[in-house]
Image (cartoon, rainbow, N blue to C red; front, side, top):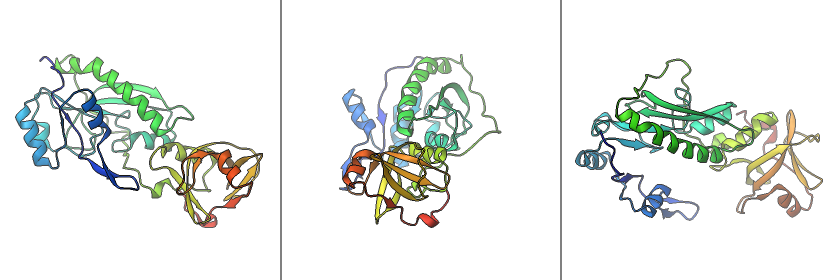
Length: 291
């Protein structure tokens, strides 16, 4: 089987985004248009089936499409649908593998090439590449790195799979974990966390949807924190030497990058300067829920 050029690209329909709810095209559509590739945005399973049934492709490659694909669709290509999944399967099956790996404190993540079946990332795997999760990396940074790694792994191993030089292996039953989609409620920061766990939450929700707390009646997002040694009362932010320090139940963190409600993201020092050295207390700090 010889792999031809990319026949077309399929992505989600244009959707409203942001505060203005303006309709925007997915990034995949913009990139495909830049490369001169035909783009389709099916609104339904029936449209998707019609497209693939008519195309008669050798293989389809899937990356974070966001939908479970039915068996009848998976059977429309000669060699199936190959998924580039951003985890070391069977760990972190689902929509948010990178974020869940950070939250759990995993030391490593990676890319798995998997032949899709009807389950949630349960298909057989034929290639894996591992990479460390560095201490200060955000979900956005890791996802960007895995995107490049995934492209390399696909380039190096897809042809071997198509020519039966690589045989997919069933995933182990042990060690499987789920990575459900993130929620804004989960992104709420908790002063009961220690500094390490607190920082992981910030990293996991950067850039979306942004970890947050409420103070003085407004939601404040936090995109980066750093270590801090001063003793500050739990749930209180004090400005110490121009730096905003948030006290946790067991320790403290410096707020390095924040986004106050209705404003652009800014450094913690700039935010502290704007407050003229006035500290503040988190709303509901006495009863914030544990993560």
